[in-house]
Image 1 (cartoon, rainbow, N blue to C red):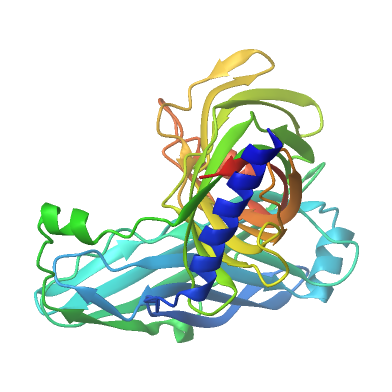
Image 2: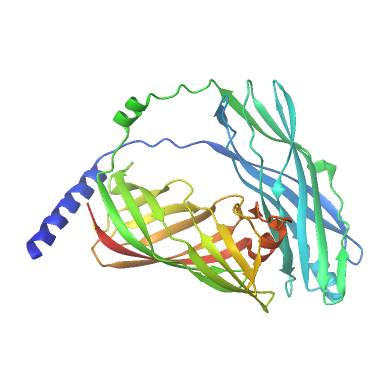
Amino acid sequence: MTQTRSRRAAVAALGLALVAAALAPATTAVATAATRGGTSTCQAGGPVEVPVSFSATFAETVAQGANVPVSGAAVTLVVPAAAVDALRDSGGTSVDASAAVELSVAQQAGTQELTVTGLSTSEIPLPADGELRITLPGRVPPIAAGAGPVTVSLTSLAPRLVVRGETLNADLACTADPAANGELARVAVTAAEVPVVPEVAAAVAEAPLLTAKFLVDGTSHIAKMGSDLVLEQGTFDAGLFTGDVPNTIRIEGDLNLPKSSSYFVAFRFMPVTSDVELPQDGKATGTADISGGLFTPTIDMTIRVNLVVSNVKQDGVPIAVGPGCRTVAPLVIPMKGQTSLLPGSKSTMESTFDIPAFSGCGVSEDLDPLLTGLISGPGNKMTTTLTAQGVG
């Protein structure tokens, strides 16, 4: 057995050394973050100026006939500290926030009007002091690129704030600032891509030099709910490819997590159960530094998963969320830290991530605002333990 382990270790060491020694320049997609903002006037014991902005990241170029890649759409509002004090003095304990955002997409064939979805959350506690910064994640509908450049402009940004308390329910009557409107991004359109013949694609596809296999255990702390979701044990297969510089390797991984059952207490008194799935959105990607040892690489990797909710019950009573209840965008979970490839060894990493708004929830009524208000937001924590199963 000792000789077998030694042979495996030698094979793995040789493979990792080959990966670290080779150079294979990577191609990175170019994207540009765009933001437009203004000042909304809200009524909080008098007129209060609330900075509000819309931001998103657009690809700089796109092939004709493809959809323009857009990510990170969000509205940010900043309620000044003095206004927060006034709301608290009036009996307010939390606020509901939403925004209506309209975009205009101009191309050679004409102009298209789009409405950004999501952009809603509820029961944000008022801080004990200081300003209140609110981020509302959203989703830009698909933008199909025709001939010529694609120009995306902001045409309307209308925030809404509602303060709530035990005996209070007041709309702050926020105005929209036309000064926020204007061009967000201009995307160049290239000639349509020629499809790759499948036989050619198969021939040129790069195969990993090694594959590292792990068991995955995780616990996610949902900030808004104040509760933990313990994930069922899954697997992670990490393909190890040639890196861009010496002593590094490139990682492309496949994460498979089974369906998990969750139990939360909403509004501090209402038990809620559901099934949760985290299907991977594209391969996990990143790099690993092996300068500290071939079998103890330090990884810097990003995993993208969609959050899908089903079988929701409130105090045992089913809530018909339907089969398509999921976040409008993937959860982006960074994983950084030292790992071990020695079979049986465990590596634990801590991550912080945002949960986007929900979409497609509800059979007979729109439950998107409910799920978004209960779950979506920043500051969620993930503790992940990887148990190495060996390399091959």
